[in-house]
Length: 203
Image (cartoon, rainbow, N blue to C red; front, side):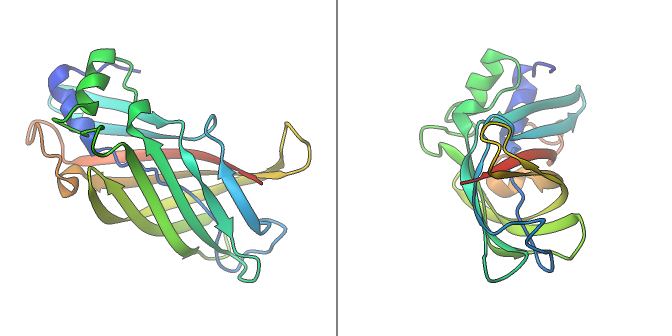
C-alpha cells in the first residue's frame, strides 16, 4: 500500500466507508440466505478507499468493523444492516498520515469515532447482484448511499463446521464534500471510490 503524502492524506477523510456492506434481499430462497442474525467477521471485512489527485492515486483501508445483518425469517430476501468501522483503525500504511486523518482537522476521531452504514429492510432482485440502499454517517453527517454488491457464496463456518457464513464484495462512490471534507480540492478529487470485501457469520 502506498503511503499518503501529508497534503494528500487530508483528502482521505472522504472515506465513507463504509462501509458499507452487504446483506440479503428480495426473492431469494432461504437455502441461499438462511434467515437469522449474522455478525460481521471483523478479520475478513474491510473497505478499501482510493482517490485520484494531481500527485497520483492515494489509498487506504477501514478495517476491523463491528455490527450485524439480520435476515428476516418471514420476508425472504429482506434484511436490516448496521455496521460501523472505527476511525481509529483507518490505515494508509503511513503512521503520520493516519494520525493526521484522525485528528480534529479531518475525521475528528475524538468527536466522531466511527463511520457507519445502516439500512432497514434492504431488498434486491433474485440474482447475485445486490443493489443495497442505505445511509452512510461520517464526520457527523448522514447521507444516502447505494452499494452495488455481489454475493460470492455461502460457506460453512470453518471454525465450528456448523454455522453458515455469507461473503459479499461491493463497490460504491461518494463525494467527500458532502460530509464536510473538502481539504485539497481541486488538486485532490472530490470523488472517492470504495471497494468492499465482507464476510458475515450466523450467530
